[in-house]
Image (cartoon, rainbow, N blue to C red; front, side, top):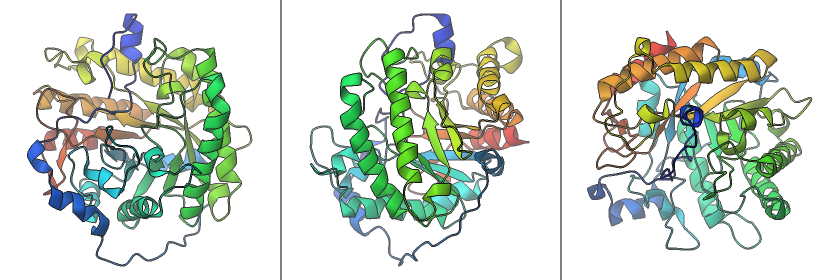
Length: 397
């Protein structure tokens, strides 16, 4: 998360959507090491069986009914060494998280989650011809298979890219790169069934400008719509199951600011489109640096931001037959796990009431003063905040 910013008005504070969790968090430095880094290349010991699934021809409104609550593999495949150029597979551990294992996803599934999001950065693994390194594509597929083979839903996206900022003078070049990338991803995963969902963009926005988190402007909205259309058209043009693949498209910055929502263009005649939203709400409790804003009590007023959020999503999308997934949400640790658990239960309850699945952003970070969203120890597969997991599951009831 690049979240050293100020909001112009209370409404923006209420509806602010974070930056895609690009902050490395505060992963324990002792967790890194050459042994783990070198282990990325040979993490899988079992031979993968090629996937050749049928895909059901169902609308996304039906698909999301099968999704409960989810977990994100943050700061892992989306990690990168900012001091380097082209990356290799060791970038997976460059932000301090360990090599990903199938056992991690088993623990996530056993806790009650049935969908995972795998944020992935691709640009630093592509050559000048926009071709993705084969070794990187293999590793991404390997991790997708860890979850997919256990009958979980999987969201695969592009994350932390620095080449598709939504400006008119950048739009055509970025669109061509986007099409080249999704052609390769689509071809690699063409035989996966409906449990594999593609998310075309993470939080497309004008980074480091006044428009970054305020809902954007006309230019930003129009270019994001162009990107979304190119993504959908590209995947639909491919073979295998891609014509029936369920696809997620974001608003500008995946924002819930009214202007971003209302300007989102939904492809016509395609019933397999899901709107992608990120909502760390209320901002003060869930995302701000203030360690004193750490209390949440649903009947004492600070639940109104969640009520507003769900009402807006229901009115603008759900009531119109347009499904939504909140692909990122969470509350950073402020030494307040009990309050976070109450918040998590309330948030999931309200989202579930209107049929919106949510995925917790877990960046593997627990210590220090950073954005600590970690809830599971990825080395021993133990939930370090069991009360939050319990709250998430209770919210589903």
